[in-house]
Amino acid sequence: MARVLVIEDEPDLQELLRYNLQKEGHTVTIAGTGSDGLHELRRQPFDLVLLDLMLPDRDGLEVCRIVRGDEAFSSLPIIMVTAKSEESDVVLGLGLGADDYVTKPFRVKELMARIRVRLARHLDETRDAERRRIQVDKLTIDPVRHRVLINEEVIPLTLTEFKLLHFLASHPGVAYGRYDMLDRVGDGDSVVTDRTIDVHVRNLRKKLGEYERLVETVRGVGYRFSEIP
Image 1 (cartoon, one colour):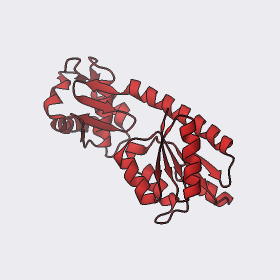
Image 2 (cartoon, helix red, strand yellow):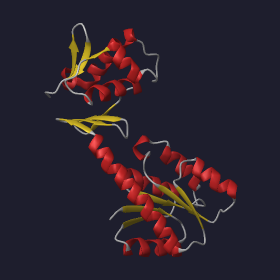
Image 3 (tube, helix red, strand yellow):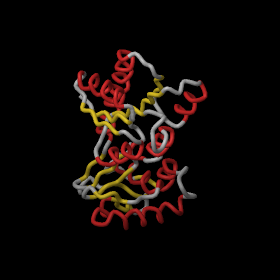
Image 4 (cartoon, helix red, strand yellow):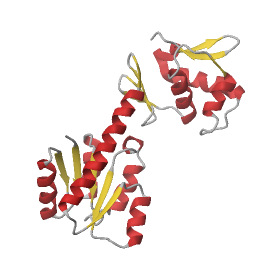
């Protein structure tokens, strides 16, 4: 049903979690250290992470911070499973981006119930994201991960360039003036005015390469996204 990564160094607990997760139909990968867990995350996709805090190499808080700092994993559910039960630990864990916090010893049925809730929500969000993803030939615009890919290769756009492209591509064939576009991208990674819209569009086109023709100039108006790849 789902792919679960368990980052846990206690062998008995590894097997307990593996058994119960597989019993519910999930595919389980075990990592005994934080570094191994990060390696697995970059090697294959997962739908949920169970993360211990007290790991032999780097603690789970650091792992969580690294994962949440990577846009590719921004929506990946993380449930911390740990013996650290102080309120300050819980607050810190949730503050770093964990979706849930379960203390050891835990009731297996309760943990499985929490996993089901998080997975259901994540899968719903994933399906919604797939519906909002824009695909034109070999150009992909992913609004969840804020990424643009051409032939599966990530194109390094600035936040403003991404917002411009996604806004236009979400309304193909519709011409927008510079002030209309400014309303959509005004709070970006640089100062954006109606005069600099042209500069951002020019830079965007250069990065799009063979797909630069998709961003068309409409004389006397502004720009539009072509409906023809």
